[in-house]
Structures are given as C-alpha cells and as structure tokens.
Length: 528
Image (tube, rainbow, N blue to C red; front, side, top):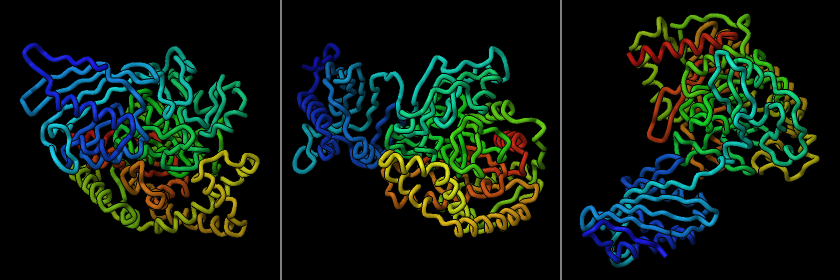
C-alpha cells in the first residue's frame, strides 16, 4: 500500500496516481510498449541515474530494451507537489525485493493523449526522471574484488594518496588472477607476490583498491564481458566502455580509483580512454615489465595506465619507467596521417581536425605537416595475422581443454586465430617488418597525431556487424604503435553529443614521459 504525502491545502489528482500505479505495474512486467506511453515523446525527455543522463525518448527506449527489466519493487511512499494543475513533482520511495531502498523523482505533465492509442490516465506523462537505486556493496560489472585497501602502498612516495584499479590480468599478492574468465579463475592459485607493474605503483605510495574486470583474456576492444556484465560508461551512457581494460577505465571515470593499471595489445588502454574521456598511455614496447601478467600476444603486449588528468598519469608513468630509458622529443613538431583520418567516422575526423586547428592557432606547433603512412586496412591485416597467431599459442591449449568457457564472440576470435597457418604468419611478419621500416622512415622523431579510435563509443545494443566494423577501423589506427613499438597517448580533447573522442599522440620510442608533458603543455596553451 503506497502512502501518499501532499502539502497542506493540496491534493494529488486521482488520475495522476492512477498513471503512477500503471507505470509501476509496467515496470514490474517489463512491458516496453506501456512504459513507452508514459514518457513524453521526442528529444526533450530526460532520465538520469548513477550511470549518467539519457537525453531523448529514443535513448530512453533503447536503454529499457537492453536492461532486461528493473526488478520487482514495492512503492512505499509517494510525495506529490503540484506545481500547476498540469505539472506535478513526484518523489517515490521504493523497496526492492532484493533489499534496500530506492528513490525516484519525476516531473509529470498533462501533455499526453487521453484517448486512443498511447492514452494515459488524464494525459499524464513523464518529462524527466532521476533514479537513485539502493546502494550496492560494489558493482560486479566493474570490480572482481575490492579491499580497504586490497594491497597497501608505501607510507610515502610520489603516489601517496592515490588508489589503483588493477586489470584482472595482473598478479596481486594474496589474490588469484581471473583474466575475465570464471573457469580460469576457478583453477588459479593465490599469488605470492604482485606483478612488477603493480609493485612499481605500490612502492611509489599508491594503494590497490581492487581487481577490476577485463574482457575475456583481454581479447577485445569493446569492453563487453558476458560472464560478469559490461562496465558502465558514465561519459556516454548506453554505450560500450571500451576494452579490454574496461574495468579499470570505468573505475577511474567514476572516481572509484585515481589510476587504472591496464594492458594494451591492440588498443586496450587507448580505446577505453577515448570512449570515456580519460588520459591513457600505451608505453614503448618492452619498457614496463610484464612479469606476473597474463600474456595475449607478447610482441605487442604492454602495461600502461589510465587517469582522469595528465598530471596523475605522468606521476604513474614516472613511478614505473626507468629514467634511463627515456628521451626528450621536439614538442612543437607534429605530423598528421591523412590515410588514418580517412578511416575514421566523418564526425570524429572533422571534430579532431578542428581540435588540431585550434592547437595550431594556439601556437603549439612550429611545424605541422601531413605524412603518408601505410593504409589502415593494410596495417590491420598485418596486425590481425601476427597478433592472432601469438594469441593462439598463448591460450589455445587451455581453450581446447575447457570447451564452452568463453563467450561466443571471444571464442570465435580465438577459433579464427587457431586457423592462421605458419605460412600466413610468416608472410604477415615479413609485411610487418616492411611496415615498421616505412613508418619509422615517415615519422622520424616527430609526433604523429591521429584519432585514438575510429568512432565514439558504439551503443550497447549495436549489431555485431557494427562492432566488427568499428573494431577493424580502429585497429588499423592503433596498429601503428603496435607495429613500431612506439608509445601512444590518448588525450581527451573533443566532446561530441554521442560521447568523448580522444586525440592520440604517437612519439619516438622512449619518449613516453615527454609525450605526456607535451600534451599537458598543449592543453594549457589551448585554454589560454
């Protein structure tokens, strides 16, 4: 029984309360058609929750269609404030069957039809809603396990006070490694020491908050995990978070950790950074130890970091990189790859082009020239065959011994990898050597500017075909750093209506710290 509360001298219209009751009944039954009638049509509808703000009826309907229901709950109280005869502010308190209390605040207006198709009681429809779900212990889509802290940092150091979300491919002392695969986790032993990349951060004073989720065996750039759920993207609600360092990226974006420790083989730091408006660095290949980390394709695997600002990223990189491996770079000389920009979505290419023009107008460049790089589709082909052959060597024996342990998309990817022949790999390795030489000759010691990803984050309900098209276009860009072993930094520079877009800086090998410092200086100049 719902208790209705109104101020003295006001009454809650019966048809409004009837509309509220029917709306709650439709929620319980996950009746999408009825739920649609109760939200105003068009681009002005709003729905917000901890995952972000949905704008427009289309986004709200798509969100409902993929969430699989809201869970059963009882509305215990309804607080009604009549603004006008046709406008009502309603805040309800609900008791979900799973426990806790939730709060929903809605702006109802008499603007819907009262007769015929889509009619609602009194024409009452929701124009805006804010949903506060009961507090959860932790979001298992983001975290596999949490601690307070899980692994403490040194009492002092440059990272003292910072917290780390560790991708579930790194050993953390006292914990097992799961690789995003429940069957693998079930067989894993507890680690006696942390991976070198984790230890570097804790020695500098950072504490490990928890182990964050990853795409299965880190073999994806979408961020979708069928076993644990898909981490939310607060920068683009309703879109994928980007993977495979999806959990650390979401944890950092939501403010649950200040540093994300991830891996980047094909773009698994740069892509989630781009999709979620973060800073993310794939370092020079081989400069950060991968001892204690699960492999995917060792000739491409790197360990790197995500952060909400450049200064934090710089401190994490300084704590983890040997200064003797670092070199300076000409910070005012840059080149832009025309073929790569042509492979990006038009809106992304235009927005990043405008951003580069703005940087140029801020006088950060002494020279900014076009450069002719190999075609992204050729780089993708080289990368796909060489990476896949290594991935099969890393994991196919385990996969064969555990049929059904992987999600369909990841299993299909590994199955394709297992089919790469020795002759195909040898041919791709020869082409890789030629492409590396051509790229080094074209780029020299300049900084290459290109999109961090080919598009904004695709929608959660995007078709497999759309996800594969985005994957191939993006890997044709990210492969430049992979094939050359150069460091690549994603910087959050553009915000489109559909979400953030990162600008990627690829520098000479060993210019990792200089790249971050350069980007910080460029953004400062842009802000004036």
